[in-house]
Length: 336
Ligand SMILES: [Zn+2]
Image (cartoon, rainbow, N blue to C red):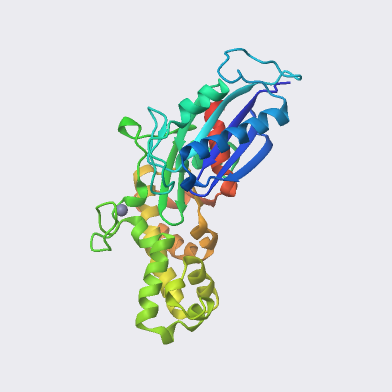
């Protein structure tokens, strides 16, 4: 019986999640704790180390100790193979550092890989969180063993990842491609990335909320349900409440969702035309309302069956939820 354990963690803007798995992908422990980024990276790193330590102790697995270089054998002989880390970028994958003061205030040039190697004496790997989540879905989720898997996460922004034969496809210099910033409509809104009309500026959760706020402000009488859901305050409107109002028959909310669904479909069509994957796995808060996007998407796919049998691309909701990143980070160490 192979008792080797891999640990995966997902460092997000608010929470660090950690899971220990057998190399066959069976989860054996899950933990999470607030990251409290504002308290500084040293605080965060110590919190992460104590989560790892607590799992090591609970599972009686051995690692190489705190820099002693001596392998402490466990009672039942299991070994910690390594620790995979998924984190919200920008990251320097070559130096193993997190440089993300945007989502993790104070976290500039934080050497997460060196810190964990020094502390636990095992191999450590760092990966962009969108790529890690896609790998997780490939390993144990909706895209299990799919040879050409594209993952699209629609939340505050839009993230994309491509897994080809079980490996993340990276750009030159290890950069993570940013499919959310492909241009869908050059006459669209300006994006912080320097472009205009990027996919995420047209169909992400923030785009849906922004368009709804603008329209409601102009025609409040057309959006009674949506306003009621937000205590009459248009500035409180979220993408989730727009979807909810659309379900309840609010015509303005439906108009906003339909428009976002058109733009969403164009992005998916671009992916199909560029990559023609076997499967596209959808995740993120906005995709919890995928049923509202689906009719528009299916229509768009039917329009694009001239060059390719676009309807053969399976479009599936992700199945691991917010644990996908933890699974994928662990898989980095299985698949070294
Ligand atoms: Zn952009």
